[in-house]
Image (cartoon, rainbow, N blue to C red; front, side, top):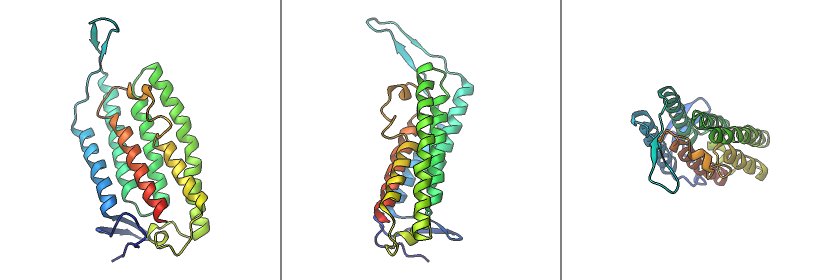
Length: 222
C-alpha cells in the first residue's frame, strides 16, 4: 500500500491502483473532480440534445434550427471521449499521462465545436485548434523538464518534496493546460457557445475547469 505524501494538497489517499510504476489514485480532491467529470459524461450519454431557437431582432418572429442527426452523433461521441479523457486526467499519478489526457481533451473539444457547420463557429474552432496545437509544446516540454531534472514522472515521488521541480516546468504545465483546456483564450468566446448540441458543448467548459483544478494541485504539490 502506498502512502500519499503529506505535501499533496488533495488530502490522504482513498484508493490506489498500481500499473507498474504508474499509480492511479483517489484523494478527496481528485475523487471530487472524478465525480463531476463522471456526472457530465453520463449526461452526454443519456441526454437528448436541445434544438436551438433564433429570434428576429426587434420583432416576435422566431424559428427552430434543424439539427443534423449525424452531427449530433459525432458530437455525442466526442463529448463522451472528452469526459473519459478528463476522468483519466484527474486520477492519473503520472505527469506524462496527465499531459496525454490533457492533449486528448483539447482534441475532443475541437471536435465538439467543429461539428457545427456554421462559418463563425468553424472559424473559432480553427483558431482554437491553432492555440491547442501550440499549447502542446509547453505542455510536453514541462513534462520533459520534470523528467530531466528529477529522473521521474511519478507524482508519488514528486509530491514527497525530496526532488526540486524547476519553476519553469510548472509554468509550462499550467500554460499548456490553459491552451488545451480552452481557458482563458476561448472560454468566453461567443462563437464557441453558438455551437448547438447542449449538453455536449458543456463538456468544453467542464473539462477546462477540471483540468485547471487538477494542474493546480499538481504544481502546488510538487
